[in-house]
Amino acid sequence: MFNFAKIQIGNMKNFIEELKWRGNFHQATPGTEEALQKEMMKGYIGFDPTAPSLTIGNYVQIMTLTVFQMCGHQPIVLMGGATGRIGDPSGKDQERTLLDYETLDSNLNYQAELMAKLLNFEDGENKALLVNNYDFYKNMNVLDFLRDVGKNLTINYMTNKESVKSRMETGISYTEFSYQLLQAYDFQCLYEKHGCKIQMGGSDQWGNITAGTHLIGKNIKDAEVHGVTTPLLTKSDGKKFGKSEKGNIWIDPKLTSPYQFYQFWINATDEDIFKFNRLFTLKDHAEVEDMEKEHKENPHLRILQKSLAEEMTKRIHNDEAYDGALGVSNLLFNKKANKEALLSLSEESMKSIAGEIPSFSISKDQVANGINIIDLMTEATQIVASKSDARRAIKGQSVSVNKDKVPSHELTVTSEHLIHGKYMMVENGKKNKFLLVAK
Image 1 (cartoon, rainbow, N blue to C red):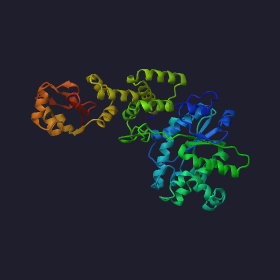
Image 2 (cartoon, rainbow, N blue to C red):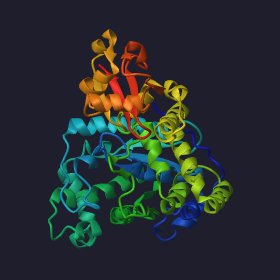
Image 3 (tube, one colour):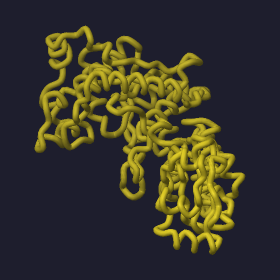
Image 4 (cartoon, one colour):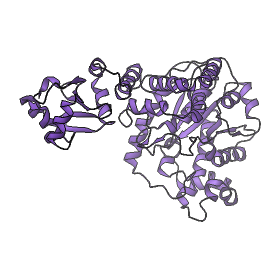
């Protein structure tokens, strides 16, 4: 499904400077940048399995780990097998709906498979690690947790965190209130078991991250740990990044087709594309800056949109998926697209088209026996309102089947017209495209 995105590991680079160049730095604890320059360090980001897959919103933080690895450090992916059962109140104005354990475990296993394809877990001293925080708690009882963890963070300290403070009026359960204790203890466990000294996350995680540095400082003598946060990414219209009119943009082709994924980047505004491109590209700085200059000089060419759409579609999916997305885009938006372009599309690409233009189900048996074009346009589908409308459109040379003009109202459509034995495109004029799916 996905290609393994093997990250090229270079010499030690300044991670904080790299984040700043990408517009992806918010704040860090004192001494973080200097510590990162001294040695290869291990750093982690946590991901709770509260969704069936990963979105490109999640990929912002995966990209943070990618850059961390590119700068010569070792990333740790912490899967929230435990914290996912609690629910993080950060950025939420009401309680989360708790998922059952079976669903959480299924989500976690699938997300872990995706992570294996998005970071380098195979090569080099700094190959990525994947850890499940359920392993930290499965043998711990509540009394041990309250004595070893709860005793070290005061109620005053915890209620002063923004994730809690913002919920004091609307209400917060003890369950979600305790989330920062678990995240703090996660950091301590990763420090003790794996030598992890840095926790990273979005700016809404700052309170949880500093709770971890505070807990480690109290429990472990001379421990030096750090926190780094990135800004929360929004689009220029103020809407949440990773959303479209149809909902989340997933990195799973079963949930968001490669065509829809490609279109998300192609449709990015000029106000957004400079930010998105720097954040997600793996091209070197000089090439990116040259592209930015060329884009500003020729904005109508949409150079950055096309470049990032290609790079991201190939990285998250594969070259074939990119070619398919390009083919579907060409067919739907290029008025000069011909029959050859249509017939060259894969079955998966035809399925994508069915989700983008009006589609009708027709009977395979009916097509096998032959159906008159007039009946096809009116009785089998609702392409036009009446038979007289269909005749008028055909007489005016407006109707085509699979890019072939319909010569007369006597045309019989058969199974031979089905692409991949299933699909048929009917057009009525230049703008009205319909996909018929034989079942």
